Each structure stands twice: as structure tokens, then as C-alpha cells.
Image 1 (tube, rainbow, N blue to C red):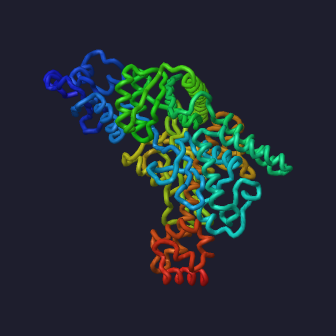
Image 2: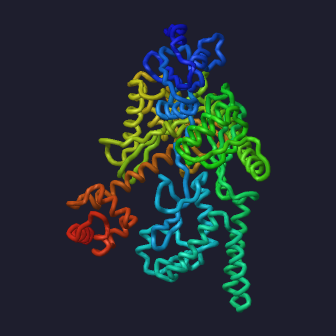
Length: 603
């Protein structure tokens, strides 16, 4: 470190702000906020350092950039923004790149539909949530279908139906597509759905009970049974999601640690319903004060998501008022941060901690199991050094069409999806799996030798002796023979568990018990590579086929192709579309519609 810290510290004000630490290449190492810049930055120059992490970081620091702010709240928000943008090496970084799903009720349509929705929340339709996962939304949709038969089909299906579907036959839809229900009655059903999603299930249940009694008095027992089933469905919904003691909206946030794992969890409560929990495992934060970790993760989370009126945290945060001010600024509303709670809120917190502890315990057990498997594979390979990075390659195509290769990555923590890669195969004979694998490994190793990406310890190859020999030749060509290779050949009948394994220079296969830790790990990684390759191939094949069928028509480009497919929901309905339907699509003129019809007729 070349900073002359005494004059530098003397130049700093005793005011709030943010500091950015950089190395000699101006790479950002750390971003921090301070109530007093002079005091906080000065603490880094005191020896001994407060932790090993700080000691390692300060050995690389060559420059410190200062940003003054008017208040500590501004400093907290600026710090979080810079962390998100710069992604410093030593900062706590919430890996939350997935938006929360909502349940969407399309009130702007004549016959509104219920559907899962992700995206911006400032839309005209009614959104309910956020839910913790898409699975939680689908569960709610399934429950609602049993209570109120509001349609859930997409608009393309709705527009093109000529008779009611199976959902109508089993009384999960009222058949608005073929006008089997009046618009006013349908709107009444939609109103009931809104009440249920706003926590007013008891009101709907009471109405159904009165309707059931009336139907019984009129000896309409089939109608009475229908209302009985709907009342039971409401009760099951309440048992599944309702938490007694309030209709408020709140997030319950917990942070727990065990066996070098730190778990950050958020449980969403909306209108008294538990909409599920989302969990995030954070690395390299064990030497941080736990309340500081919680504060930083909360700010990062709510920069991307809706802030509720109430946030319940465990453990408590020392400066809760500062966090409240920051969340108020982010949410543009009054926000209360609480840790000491009673009554219904204490019940929410108890449930959140119970779920978080279960999730953490399962993860710790899974990590121990994964490390055992990694150690067993290391022994199989005869390595002295532990395996830290494994890359597995696979290819997928349909009789040579749209070939795609995949590379998946596993480390000591398990799968690393952010490191997965797909490769488009170029200039080979269609269906040549051997040539495709050779090309991909050569391209991957060439990048590694050029300093792009992390060097793997082991390459898993889907194949036998020939593929292993080919991979070894590629490593020799790039002078990378220190990287281990293991071939995985499919067993008799291509059944899982009967695989044979090949090492370079060995003519005889290694046969392992199908339940051995090494076998289970290799099979897990191989299957993941296959899944990643085949999903990539299917996407590429679908895009190629759709593009080739439409974009060859003069006047049809990528935008109009997308508009047509979006409107009709796929090529099948598009091919059968009438002139009147085609001209309803934005950008499709009568002449262009005639051209499309003629193209499909002569195809």
C-alpha cells in the first residue's frame, strides 16, 4: 500500500460519506459508508487489523476515493448503489437477480384472467403479491380455480376457442370464451376473487354457505354440493396460507449462521396470507457483525423490490432508525423496522425462524454430503490436491440440426450456474458428436490459456476411450496436461447407474458401485450438463424453425414474426389463421396477410 495515510486522513472531514478502495489496477476492492469519514477510514490503518479479511484487503489497497453526503442515510443508500454497480471483491453482495412473481388479474380485459406475472409493477392490471416463488403463485391459482371459476387460459387460446375446454367440464372455469356466462356474472366472480386475495375469505365463505342452504331447501342438491366443495376449498386455502391475528402487510427477515454458512431469509406476509419465503446463502461474511450484514442485505434487497409498511427483523439492528430512514427513502412511504414484537407478529417471526432453521439445516447436510463426494472423486483420480473446480461438457442436436454444446461448473459448494456456458457448434458434419466435443473443448481450453475464466481441475467428458483421448490431445496442444480428465460412458441400455469411467492412458474402464459417492457425484454433474445442453438445443431449434418458416417472406422481419407468434401463440394456430385474424396483428396489412396465407398454402 503506497498511501501516506496521515496527511490523507487529516484531509478527511468528520461528516457522513462513502469511501471506495481500489488496487493498483484501479479495480474496486471495497465500498463502505461512514458516519464520520475520518474516523471510519482511519480505523483501517490501525494495526493489528480487526479481521483477516481486512488485513488481506488492505495489503492490496492503493487508492481510496471519497464521496461526501449530507446525511448518513444518503451514505447508506449510495453505498448500496455502488456495491450493486461495481460488485467489489470484499463486499457483502446479495445474489438476488430474480424478480418476485405476482398473481395478475387482468382487469383491463372484458373477461379478466388470472395468471402468474413477473416484471414491472406499475401496470394497469391488478397485482397481488409478491410471492416468494412461481410455485407459490401456481399453488394459489390452483386453489382459486376450485373456489371461483375465473379463466386462467392465455388470450390466444381464449380468442380461438369454439367450444368449452376441459376446465369448464370439471367446473374450474365458467366458459366465458364461448359466452356460457354473462359479462356481469363474470365480473361478480372477479370481485369475489379480489376479496379472497385481499384476505376476505370469510365473507365469501358465508355467502357460499347461504347459497348452499338455499339450494338444499329447493332440493337442488347438485348445486348445494358445488357450494359445499367451494367452502371446503376456502378452508384448505386458509389452512395453507393464513396466519391468524391480522391483515397487515409485512416482511419478516431473519439471518442465521451454521457451519460457515450464513442464511438470509425473507418471508412475505400480505393481507394476512403467508406468501412464502425466499432464502439466500451468503459467503465470506462470518467475520462481519451480524446486524451490519443484515442491514446491508436489506438495503440491497429493497433497492430492487417493493418495500412494505413493516419489516420485522431477527436479530435486532443497533441503528434501526437509520435503516427506517433509508427504507422510507427507497419505498416513498413510512416504514417501521421492528425486532421486539408480540402477538401475531411474534407468531410470524416464529414461523419465519422455524422455516429458516429447517432450510439451513438441510443445506448444511447437503454441503457435507457434497464434500464427501468431492473427496471420493479426488481419491478415484489419485490426486493429492483437492478438487476445487469441475467442468463437464455435453452436446445435443436433432439428427444434426441446431447442435449446441454445454459446459456446467461445480465447485466445493455444488453447482455454479453463473459459470455455465453454451457453445454453438460451427463447421462440422451434421451429427458428428466427436467433432463437436473436440471443437468445444479446444475452444474452452484456448480461452483458459488466454487468461479468460478460471482454470478447471477436472474435465468430465460424456464418452469413452475415444473422447478421453481426443480431450487429452486438446490439452497437450495447449500445454495444459495438468488438468485431469475423466470420461463417462453410458452403460448397457443407457440406464443410469451402469456407467463406466475412463482415465487417460487406461484401456480398461473403471466400474464403480452405483451408490458410491464418486459415482453419484459424476452422474449428478453429467445429468446437469445433459439438461443444460438439451434445453439450449431446443430453444435454438425452435427459433431456427420459426424464423425459417416466416422470415423468408418479403415484408416479415424479426419484429413482425414476434408479433405474429405472440398473437397466435405458435406456428400451428398461425398457419390456420384467417385473413380477418391476421390483419388484427399490429403491422400486418391486408397484402401481407394474403402473402402469409399463400406462403403456408404452398409450403
